[in-house]
Length: 97
Image 1 (tube, rainbow, N blue to C red):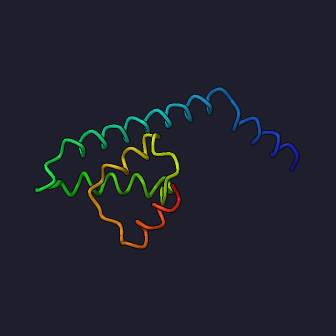
Image 2: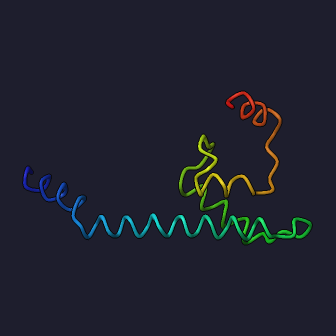
């Protein structure tokens, strides 16, 4: 069992795994920035449901429920989504600032 733990510890920190992790992080930033740009330029009178759903799913997949760092790529994306929070959520957000 100790050999397996040693291998797993090495595998998680190996240069190959670290490079893949960095590539995934770069992809996530690119995706969030792209969604943010598209939504910012979108005609809100006729929003593209597929784009909004993709952005929503990206936030959900990354467990973005509430944000404390609005300057992060995902935070910026959440800020441009044209959804209105219920009054109690708006009040909670206002009180947290």
